Amino acid sequence: MDLRIKSFDEYKEKYRQSVKNPEGFWDEIAKTFSWKEPYDKVLEWDFDGPDVKWFLNGKLNITENALDRHLEKRGNKLALIWEPNDPKERPIRYTYRELYEKVCEFANALKAQGIEKGDVVCIYMPMIPELTIAVLACARIGAVHSVVFAGFSAHAVADRVNDAKAKMVITADGLNRGAKQIPLKRVVDEAIENCNCVESVIVYDCLGWSPNMKEGRDHWWHDVVQTMAKECPAEPMDAEDILFILYTSGSTGKPKGVVHTCGGYMVYSAYSFQNVFQYEESDIYWCTADIGWITGHTYIIYGPLVSGATTMMFEGVPTYPDPGRFWQVIDKHGVNQFYTAPTAIRALMAHGEDHVLSYSLDSLKVLGSVGEPINEEAWRWYHIHVGKERCPVVDSWWQTETGGIMISGLGDISPMRPSHAGYPLPGIQPVLLDQEGKEITENGVEGYLCVKFPWPSMLRTTYRDHERCRVTYFSHYKGHYFTGDGAKRDENGMYRIIGRVDDVINVSGHRFGTAEIEEAINSNAAVVESAVVGYPHALKGQGIYAYVVFEKMPEDLETARAEIIETVVEEIGRIAKPEKIQFVSGLPKTRSGKIMRRILRKIAEGEPDKLGDTSTLLDPDVVDEIVNGAQ
Ligand code: WT7
Image (cartoon, rainbow, N blue to C red; front, side, top):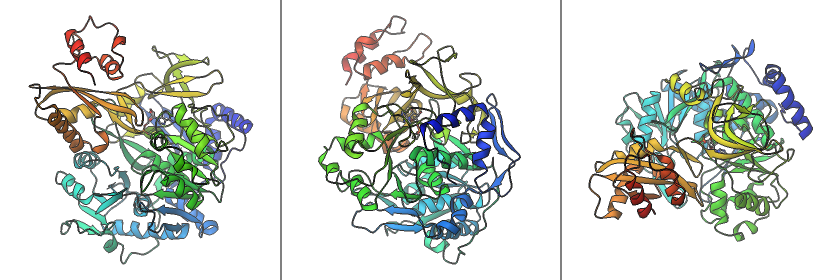
């Protein structure tokens, strides 16, 4: 079960093997997992379809690998530590045996509610242990989980529930977030008014509120588990059966359901977890992400638990009750590996060093970063003040679609360079392509980041819309998976991710499509059209800048702005609020009517002198107006 590479030389050797003989390489690793029936072939693939299958005809259940197989040796080892929002409240600790029983009990409850293999269950929950239990209980019985981040609005929940035809929603009365409490059940009620597919709702009592419970449809968590057995047979799943759907934004249309399957995802989540974090048996590992995002799926739940690790879940926020909260939690629980996002580091950095200097942080061995490019200043602050220049910082690049970390340092064994993700993990074959789609093979270059060979945890499709998967990821450059990112490769072959080259904005590590935000803004009756771009933001990485055309230029700009924000909050959620809104009389367009985003981006970035040629525009005057009114 120890899948760790232990030196950089070994890494180089393993990498070489993984390219020369990928099937042999992954077979060696996959064999160490527990399969109900062995696979008869490692890989079949065709990126044109795309049609990718790993561990063909193998049968498994990921929860047997995450729970049952540890019971004998690690039954009393802590599987999960939960740290509450309020530091005065008591943490919850579950051993592997206890977590196993909780998962089985809830799995039985799901079955009793009529959930069967292949049914989709939407999970909209706080960061509490029951979220992890719900996810694993679905996997136990072969139900497909679709976790929706609890910051999304009722509209966003309804879209995702309907797209996936979810039969059940699991939620809570509300959640704690710093000093605030946020209702969840109310959002679910509003959402599923428009979802005929939902037959039942399970509600966990988190805050002791008394939400509205609809007779026959809504059930309390504590009631449905009442008489349930603490053993539940694990459903045999084909390696290519769906494990989960996770919705993510792209450059066009509504968010799409990225589909991950059981076998490959299991193998790669554990392999990448152990190697990137160099996890050792008695370590305590903490990833601060929310389980509503892929980082939480792979590196709070599956990677660590399949590896038999102790994983921590945190209900709160970095600044509550004060900006020393992360560091206090690290000392309190003796955290060894800490994985967070650049946006959190920058936010804490802004509060000064004192908060971090009052804690010892002696237990730390490895620091991780994820979600967006980490600027050098934040990297150094993290390395010096948190890691005391003792701990390596692994800057891990990956995506919802890749399922697991693709390019990253491996604990302390690989060389590190600030703001560089570094080298690909064994089995991962990234390439840089030029404008024409030709591979650039030298070092010291920049290009479009693609992957030219399959890896076990890659997405298989986008739910119920395979064509969209093909067009989005496999049609730009034939024979390649296109990431949407631009990257540099330095003289030593280390990768540095520059950021998105498509119409995707990364706000505090959260991903939004410009089209999706525009659609929300345009739903406001007074709006004719709008264009949204990202601009550099000191804390969030990128901020959202919206250019909005009203039917009649609003008289009261502040009220008009508030109305725009309100529509975005309603359609998507608070996390997608535009930072800047500029009312304009028109948008710069080509003669064929295409919005020239390049120009809008330059203006938003505060570089109106770098607009380039605007003579081909339909109405060049509009540009002057926009430049003059820019915020
Ligand atoms: C996009 C994927 C991967 C989990 C969290 C985000 C950006 C991610 C890094 C990094 C630079 C990064 C990319 C990528 N990104 N990690 N270490 N350095 N950029 O998942 O929402 O699917 O977003 O996040 O632009 O394409 P996601």
